[in-house]
Length: 192
Image (cartoon, rainbow, N blue to C red; front, side, top):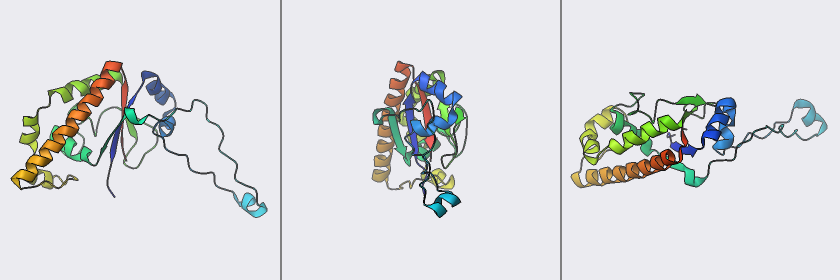
């Protein structure tokens, strides 16, 4: 089983809502609540399970346009940006650390909420990253030693293609964050 990562642009109002009702993160991420289970007497007398009580303040799921799916690429990007495979210094390690945890564990921890100011800091950091920085950090032996979920190539042409692909993803991520910052949005990172 692999770990995937999604990043969501959310409004400051949605962020405040999550601070008040952290379990609403499931609504925002479009996660379905489990179906109600029938109790012993319901099964015995054939009554259907009662639907769950309506929750006030339900949030609409984040749209696809406001979702950035890093999928498995998040781990190699985290390594190249932070130099490690675990939590690290802010904002270099923003994919794995920082923000405020909200809601339940989604598989690999709770989603992490970044307010608009932190989102702007991430945007500025991403704007400072150059292709040369990625190339310098892309050392196949170090990637393998850190047990990053990525198979680095030692073939020069394939390695160039991998770096070009990672640079393209980073450019798209930078644009995603620039849009969030310009709108004054918060962001939410979920590793699951």
